[in-house]
Length: 96
View 1 (cartoon, one colour):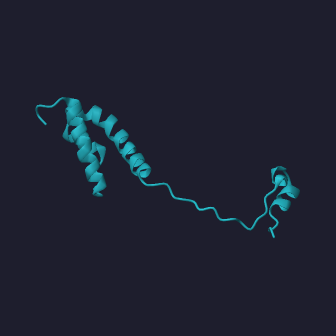
View 2: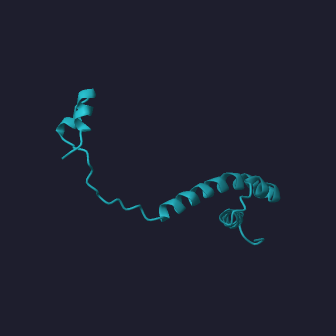
View 3: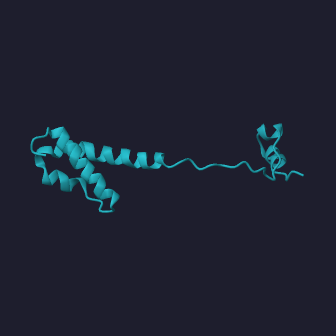
């Protein structure tokens, strides 16, 4: 890491930071900022953003839950578009 640019060093440290998070270690950003004071400002900006992107990527990588259509037992009709208690009552009557 000694021959790399500061941005490359921060990227490598961010990878290490994320690996530790994945293993359940949960290191604070402060730990890296104190250990690498010459990179502290960039670390404080990049690490939280990378952690946020990692969480989003993890959630997005899961396939969406398939929803099967199951006919309900409640009737729906044009009257459901009306407002008020009477419309609500007519919309919630069980269908036959």
